[in-house]
Length: 369
Ligand code: OSB
Ligand code: MG
Image (cartoon, rainbow, N blue to C red; front, side, top):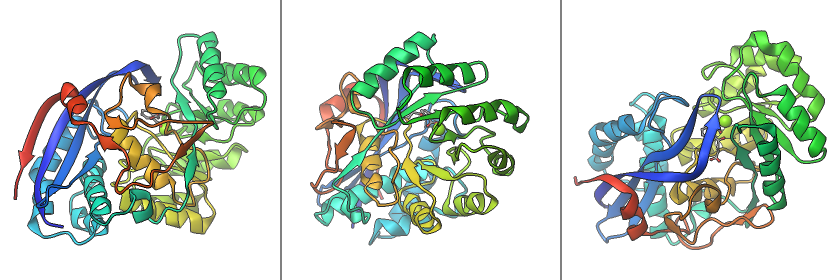
């Protein structure tokens, strides 16, 4: 591939409703898109999942722009790329900044798949024709509000309901949800809101037949999670703590989790995401694809990686309409009966719509070798 230019855009899109987690609330979402164009004029697209504030991880929209502009794009321009699988090694001299790496690597993967006439899912080695998905529901003003949303999303067919929890919005909430929905596949995500000293309280969740509890303890911990997992019968799933296949190996060997949430951005791109998938498949650890309230472009990448066989649990890739009045891709992501069909067209299989992107773009810049 001969790369002629890279364009960064910062978009601001309003979610249909505020999304509330234990660490903060989102309504107007700023994010970056990366467009990599080759000398024939074909473009590939990537999305940075960094938020404007460093609440989920240390990366932000601004730090991603800086790292892309000053480091990653120059590295990309330095030598020709034969295959996108080379990039994670080329980016590795830069410490962390995984969401920035992933946004650029993802655009090159899409470009590569389009150039070679294959769907991105197939280029990654995925064989599924469709995937099953769940939905993540933020913290609500009241339990009644939450029950109403679960009712609606379960009726829409979502295969698993994830409820956000935090101290003061946990045991009572899960207990009520179970009372009203005794059979739904249910899990809880704490986004690091607890400490090991809360183990007795977290153990109360064992009574409610949860599929898993996601990231109960600190964002950078795998030691206390191992101590907690030893006390819980509910499987622990790690999200924030896992940044690489090496992190995953260590967490599995320590017994810190029984399930891993793979977010492409958090782990530095599709190549590393696939490495974690391969390791987990080998070790018998189920994985699923997490979400970062992405636009359609990030969503399309999530759909492609979920086509790999080890993604055996429903992920957080809900329909475009769950987040946006109008998504920036055509077609939008549709969930029918809790399933998304994997597109067969070359590349992402969802076309970015330029005039829609333009409406939301607040900054853009093009870089050339
Ligand atoms: O922890 O998975 C998370 C949203 C923002 C930040 C972190 C998380 C989430 C979600 C929503 O749970 C997933 C989605 O619907 O995209
Ligand atoms: Mg999470």
